Length: 199
Image (cartoon, rainbow, N blue to C red; front, side, top):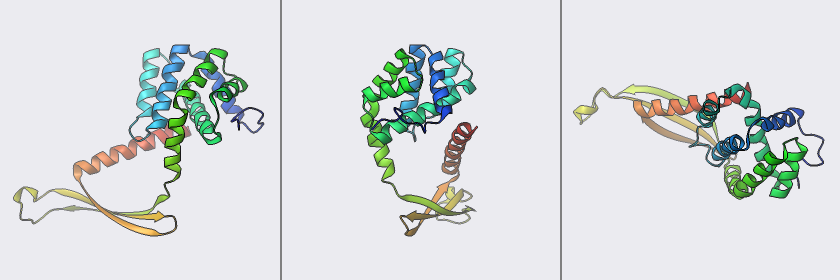
């Protein structure tokens, strides 16, 4: 099954954003696609915002002008995974979406090289059914312990209520203040990525 070919329910904005890729040189497009594929393959360890920001700075492009093409390529590659598209059909889909011949070939080649890995990662994510249903937290300070150096240390206790496919399960964890700040930084990074994509 093809992702775009022969379908009339493709969002016109996706088509317009994909056509925006034609403004990039083949080298720029290759680097741009590599950054997106790296994110799709390892979203937990790849900072897409930093990658796109560095790309924009290196090529003198406004990051805001890359927002549409970024979003469209994320949707495009996820659609290719969902529909199990071959590289040849990806090439035809790119042409149907208005990507130039050189860009379409490059995207099809990148898909051919990364498609199976993306499908594997996507399958692994789809099999996860755990969902965070609720969270309780409280801060504390160690006031007494048999270790003198631990007195006065700040900590955070979390109680996570997880929905495991209809069955609720509680998980408890305790974070030191540096661990909490690391956790908070990761949450802010995720929020900024979601806000950027929602604009």
